[in-house]
Length: 85
Image (tube, rainbow, N blue to C red; front, top):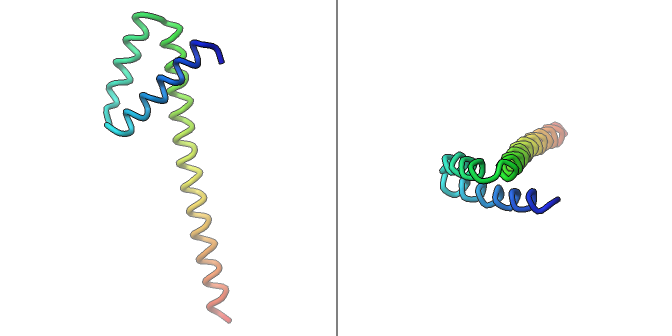
């Protein structure tokens, strides 16, 4: 990535960590406003990084949920198979 994307991605990562810890979603809008007032390029790169990282988090959470459900079904099926013999 270029400097703009690298800086925006690092900022997005820090913002996400802060939001996860504090629950303060409003900080995202504040940072977007600041970036937009100073650099539209930085604003766009930050927003893109935020969307990509948040989408990735949601996708990983969904995958984890699916894996847990699959394992639970496997355990139940394994228990059912051995209880009948």
